[in-house]
Length: 80
Image 1 (cartoon, rainbow, N blue to C red):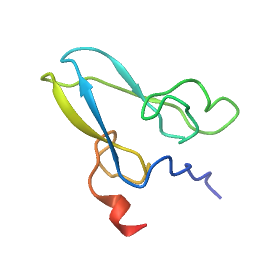
Image 2 (cartoon, rainbow, N blue to C red):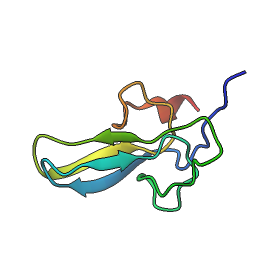
Image 3 (cartoon, helix red, strand yellow):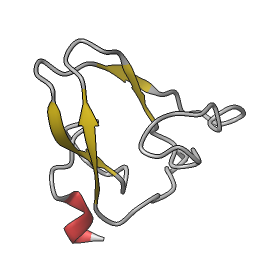
């Protein structure tokens, strides 16, 4: 059976991101620096996801770890 991520937040994190800057999205839900990776996935089957954005601004980053549009919120938390 596949390991399930921890729901860090039932809703999105609104974060300011800078175009072209690399970010590591936490996919395990264990990071203390949500929604970004802090290495807490060590010893699990999870790996962070590297991403950049095309323009600077405020983005909704998934907190429930259930989105089909990682790392962005797609409203999946409404089904929890």
